[in-house]
Image 1 (cartoon, one colour):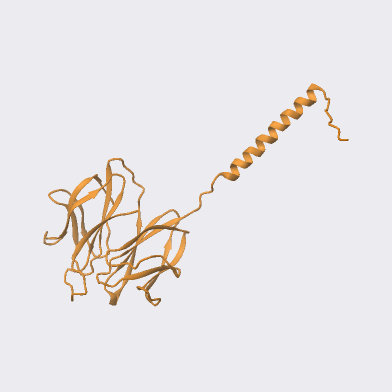
Image 2 (cartoon, rainbow, N blue to C red; image 1 turned 90 degrees about the horizontal axis):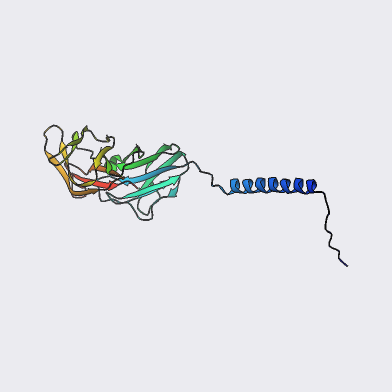
Length: 239
């Protein structure tokens, strides 16, 4: 026969045990909360863009892991992907083939955003790694930078049509810092620094508040043949 025992203690002893129970419960609860709190892992993020001015398409690998689902055409890119900070080999191949056309070692620092651009003609393929400062925020303004990625272009200016100059005198592979602009719709002109001639325009360009954008000069001022893209401009949102 099972007996149920009721402990008869003094009031003081009961209170002591009650307080001890509260302390133990609090400690267990605190420990559980700490265990459930997510630990932020260090990261870096990198985007990739094909600015090589031909009709070739490319696959891209980070340390032999393919990064793209579909081959990158001229003007095509990959949005930011978060990876662990460190040093990586970035490799480009002809679409569907494993042989490297260009392999570079890049160091991606912690908690930093990067863009990697494939540039130049196939006979002289190269890469350009840029650090992207996306720290600025605004509820009314957007942020725009310019990069000259045209191998045979002269020094270039980026201006707003009938408006302000955003940046000036950018040679091949040179990038500006971000300029803050009131969100809206613009026509951006890329001009030859020396002559002032407009080489390419981007009419009807919409930039939204709080976002960062890149405008690139791409293609060739003097294409050698029909397999090379002529000079043009491109705007894209960094995301």
